Length: 241
Image (cartoon, rainbow, N blue to C red; front, side, top):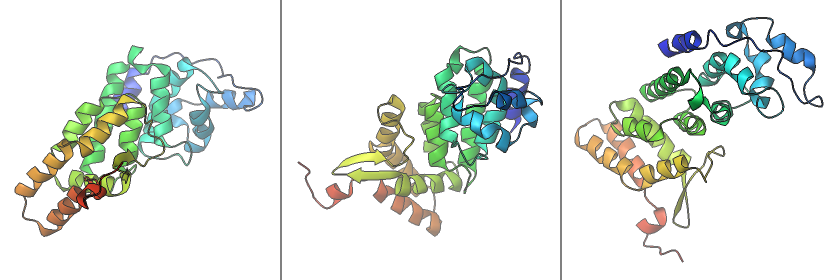
């Protein structure tokens, strides 16, 4: 991704911090020193995994996160960590207040490119569910990303929507829920995604895609997607108390 290189360039002048300090019960001081012996770009998954999971909680603060930001996001965007998941890594940036940073434009461009790349490839790793949840955790521009997805401009985003509707959306007594455990159900972004899926826009996008294709496989996916977006109880005439 070109935006990765731009991210490294934007953060190139962030000062090298002192060794990130951590909870003495959880982090050996040598672990922080080891992270500073090489450029962030040269650090591997094994070296950064524990730090990525603990930063801002029990190991290091916002200025440390800024120093390692491009590499952390590069690895998370490729789902390279066994732990933590991309949703956790992306969420660290909201926790650190990235919108107040001088590098906020480069970060926003990276998030935008990450989403576009996700939509354009199917299958994709991380999945569209993970990617959207991670961006929501980062407090990125979710309404714009949903608008982009809703264009269903090729087969890949159609397949992503089918996967998300069938596996990422559940109905409980007439109430739609997102099944990814990392979603914060109290956040505005959660409500926006649920409303987009079940409140009309996604169904309208599916209907428009129906009208412009005659590919039998794609039509089948669209039909299954349309059904998954509907409350199954309502379809059977069930009225929930």
